Length: 116
Image (cartoon, rainbow, N blue to C red; front, side, top):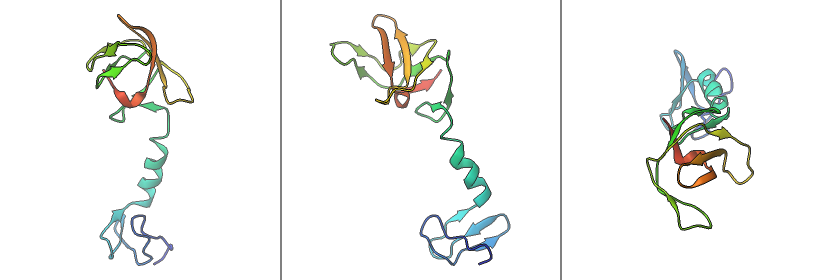
């Protein structure tokens, strides 16, 4: 092996270069080291919804499942549309601040919304 690359799947040192891809003969995993480096950096940028779409301040989102409101008997139903969200850096994982009609101001986790 020329570059000393190891298979990211099984760690084998017997990977070989074939065109633009590296191939592992032991587990049949194929990868492109240049593309893998770019893909690893992209998901960590910003806040993303449940389907990987990037979110920004002022976006509209829809809730994808019923969510119980902590400390209340209210429920945010799946499919509820939330307009004009604000992204926050909360330590508890609730990274979206918003107002929901009938409920009021609350924080949501981005894993429970999809971009509308």
